[in-house]
Length: 169
Image 1: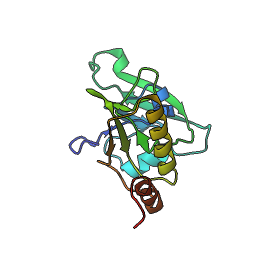
Image 2 (image 1 turned 90 degrees about the horizontal axis):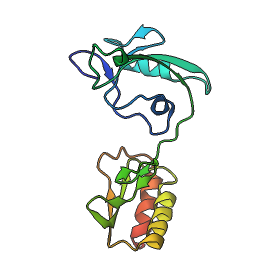
Image 3 (image 1 turned 120 degrees about the vertical axis):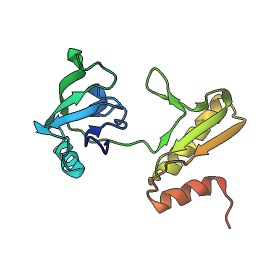
């Protein structure tokens, strides 16, 4: 949210999630949720409006980022269906047009790149499987594991990831 205006601005919708499918993108402003204006509202109250039983609907009014205020498409009423969302803990360098991750570093296609946003109980399994697939396709010269912005998560997940690369002791 912008401190000066109190507007709620989408940072990054979960790729493939209901907001993404509805066309909500980074930078869009959420004007209202269920006809309740968001400007100046408590963020946790607004976020709680998004939660609910899977399959139920929530009505949003969105002001699209980068669209002229005079353009009719600047303000959109959107109804999304609530779903369970799985947030990926391991991501690549960038998305390909088909929505899959490109695991090779842009500018150096011989270096594999894995960004780990948080540690889950399956992070080590996901990383081991990815490395196996990458080595099978094209033996990388190097591997970058990017932990910048990692929010933490399960201690056991972090330890299990380290165990993939470190010897006992």
